[in-house]
Amino acid sequence: WLEVMADVKSFGVAGTVSYVITELAFWAVAFPLAYSWYRVAEGSWLDLSNAADKAKLLGAGTVFINGVRLLVPLRLAAALALAPTVEKGLKGLGVDLKKSEDGESESSDAPAPGSKNFEGEWADSAEVDNEKTFSFTQLAKNLAGFQKNRDPEGPPLGGPSGLEDLSSRLPDCPKTRWDSDGVDIDAVQKQYQEEDIPDILTINAKESITGDEEEWLRSNREDLKKKLLKHGAILIKGMETSKSGAGFRRVYEALDLDVCLDPIHTSGLRKFAIEQDGIYEEVNKPGLRQHYIGLHNESTTNRTAAFGAFVCFLPATEGGGDFFVADGKKILRDIDPKVLKELYDKKIRISVSNLDFFKPIIQDRGLFGDYDKEVLVPRAKEDLAKAIGDTVAPKFDMDLEMVWGADGANEGYRLQAIELPETPINRHPVTKEPVWFCNMHNHSRFLRDNRPCTVPEVGMTETFFGDLSAIPENVLEEVDRASRKNIVPTPMQAGDVLLVDNYRMLHGRDIFQGDRLHAVSWFTWPEEANIKEAVSNTSEGNSLNKMINKYVSSLK
Image 1: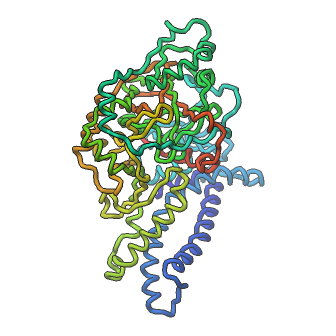
Image 2: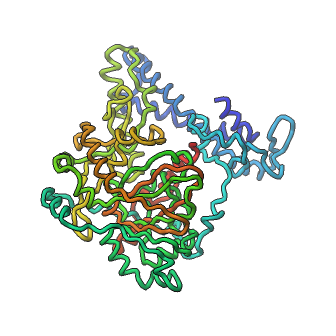
C-alpha cells in the first residue's frame, strides 16, 4: 500500500488531513457496528466474564480483522476522493499548503506529468497509460474517481444540443412486459418455417432523402415505426445530421421517440456520452476492446427498453468493432424443438456478478473445530447474503437473489447475484408474436470461455436452469448455433443510425482495435414516458453508474 499512501501524501497537508478524517470516521463506525453485529448474530451482548463468549470473540475478531483489511482500498479511495475538498477548505482558511518537503506550494500553473490536479484528475503521462490493469492500488484510485484528463465535448461527439436539458428528467426504463404462458412451440416453429420473415431494412439516406433530413424523418416517422415492427431493425446509412451528438438527439426527436434510462443504468457498463441529451456511450472502453459481446436484448427480468437507436460517430480506427443483430423470430424458428422445450419448461436464471472477495474473511480456519464449519461460516454467509441482498442489490433494479456457490467455484465462497427465473420465449408486446427473448448467448460462461472475453471476474456472468442446476453444454451449443446462424452484420460509418425493436431484435458487437465511438439512446412506451420511480433513477443511482464506469474505463 506504499504506492497508494504516496498518492495520498502527494496532496500534502490536504492529503494528511483527509486520511485522518477518513480513518476517524471509519473506526467510529466500525467498532459500534461490529459490536451490534455480535448482538444480532449471537442473540445477546458480549460478556467477557463468560468463557464461551471469550471463545466466540476470538472467532468474531478474526472475521473483523480480515474485514478491516479487505476495506483498505475503500478507505484509501475515500481519502483520495476527499483530498480536493479538504484542500479547498484549508486554502479558504488561509493554511499554507505544501506539496513536498522542498517547500513547493500548490500554486504552480499546471500539474507535472503523472501528478494529480485538484479537480481529481490525472495529468497525462506514460505512467498513467500503464496503470490500467487491475490491482487493488488502481481500484482505490478508480473508486476515488482519478483518471486521465479527457475532453468529453471534443470531436467527433461534440457538445450538448442546447435543447431541453434531460439530465434530471429522463423517465425510467419501462418494466419488462412478460407474456410467455401457453406458447405452442411446435405450432409457432411450423408457422415461422413457412413464413417469409423479412430481413432488416436498410435505407440509404443519400438516395432516399431529398432536402432536410430532420423534416424527412418527421414526415415519414409513422411509416418508419410500422416498418420497424415489420423488420425488427432499420439501418439508415449516410446521414449527415447524426454525425454529432446534438444532431443525433434531433434525429430521435424527429422520430417522436420517448427517450429513457438504460435498463441497466446502475451497472455502470455504459456511461452518458451526453447526459443532457439522453445519449449513452456504447461499449467502447479500452478494457473491453477484445471482448466479444454476444447476442442479447437490452433487458433484465425487471426492465426492458421498448426500442433503441444506435449511432456511429467514429468506427474502430484499426479495424473490427462491427455491430450485429439477429431476429428473435428466426432464432426461435431454428432452435432444435427438444432443446427449446426443455429451456421453456425449466426456465432460465442469469447470474450477473461474482463476488469472490469474502473468502479471506469468512473461510473455515479450523480455529474452533466443527464450530467454525457448522456455525460461524454458515452464519457469516447468511448474514452477508442478507445484508447485500437488502442494501446493495436493490440499487441495481434487477430483482436479484444473492446465492452462495451456485456455480461451485471458489470452494463455495463465491457469492453470486442471480436474476429470478424467466422464460426464454416471450410474446412481443405489440404484435403478440412469440420471439426468442433471452440473453443466454451473451451471458453463458461456457460460450464466453470459447470466444474472446476480457470481462473481470467480478463481472463474469453465468446461466442456469430455473432451479439453478447447470445447463448442459449440448444445449448451450445448440443455442449458439441457432443464434450465429441468424447474425446479420451491420457495419456502420459516421452518421449511420440503427433503429431496433428491442423485443424482436437481439444485438451484439465484435472485437476491435484502436479507438471507437458509438453511442445509443433507449426509448420507453409513450404511455410510460413520464414515470420516474426507479431506484436507479436517483442521484444515488447516477453516482453508482459513474463510480463503476470509472473503474471499468481504467482497465486496459
